[in-house]
Length: 313
Length: 313
Image 1: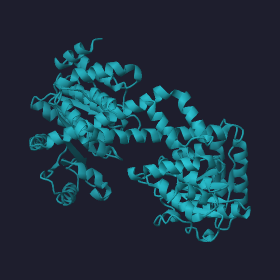
Image 2 (image 1 turned 30 degrees about the vertical axis):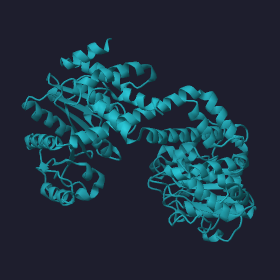
Image 3 (image 1 turned 90 degrees about the vertical axis):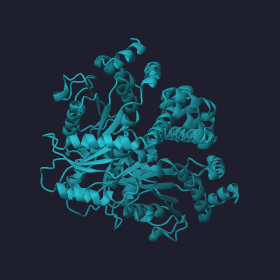
Image 4 (image 1 turned 180 degrees about the vertical axis):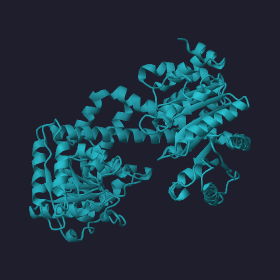
């Protein structure tokens, strides 16, 4: 398997090549290290074009249906779309990682859509780990828009905002005490808010509640709050339009800032990971064991032992 | 302030010196790095004697009352006792970090007890971070037993088991569906189980439920399941006796293994922390920023950039 050939295939729009590349970047085992580096290097000149959009929200707000409806609306505009589902509650990510685009039934036969689910490795390790590389693959494959679907629980909402250009926060009417039930975090990261299931009672109340929170923001971008019924596609065109408008807003320097910060975090995480691995390689059991025994015996202390460990890297 | 003098003072049992040393090891800011290392080195020859006992359990089971009652039972045997409260729900850790031993009213005037609360830095960072150093201070100060009180939620139960010699898991009767409501984790780490508030209905049911889970263990130590009423002190002597019995059991090699594993983790964490800091120092904003810009511009990729970063450490 030649990496350059796979990248060339992906750039020509071959779904199989895209799937192979994503499988390659998902495997972070030491024996795959060379391949991972080759893929990363080969992709580098061909990335940075796609608009990466995060879709997040609590379970039950209709994330998967909304993602599917968004794909339809984007395809109606003839945009190439990638979907990366890292939502453990998503039906797209429920099955095995087939590595191809047969998950969303409506779009399964569409040549202009790549769908990929990704194991989230525990809670959200997937987002921090392989997801940035998978996004590069979809980017290089010519996707105009990449939708990253993830569940908005725990720390994941912060992570997703760090991974994408535009964050769409989905809500539904009558979720407990409305937005009171939401952690502040998820309201802070939204560039767009979408109240889905807007045919139900309370959609306007939920919209008002979000507005009261969002109005306090000082930044230049005022997040729109849209109503949708994802099952019928109602309101989705407006979501697509607002996503595009946010991208235009970002062009004025903010996109560059967000992406620089993102790449910095990625480089730092990779560097730290490689140091951690090297620590394991070089020290092995023997040296660390000896150092620990010295500390236990009172002949050394943990800081001095850590210094010794670092010196020998 | 001379570190050796403080350590000498702590070894003579001066509460003020103990408090100063713990404050020193709690401060992990770069400017305190030298002092931290000095303290760590000065303590090294004087540690390893104390029996470190973790007290964990869900909020509401009576951890603080039990800790206080345990202190009383240990003091009745004339043992020197240290208490480190890293439980964010504990009244001991609610106040400011005064760094002295005036928290537990019953023991405030007792020369043989040191009580220290510790900020848990977010969730449990405190346990992984400064807590091991604070334990060294209390150990060097001549404590026979150090009680570490922490709340048994999330990952903390795993962390506490990694920090102590003996883990006491507290429960109370009628907690929801009894032990069904507990995550398996907390039952796996217990060396002793204590059903507190045993004067309430359901104490024996809870004990039976725990026994059915614990009975499946294969290890040599069969965790005892004791009943207490911490508010009256009932059953606490037996807890103290069983804690001592567990320590004796550990002497047969297991204590050494647990402590070696603990020190290894501590050394690794310190080494990684120092590498992370060094990465920040050496690279500063400028180099990492330049590397990120190269990646964004397609002139490099994240893995190559990470390698460059690591090379320059």
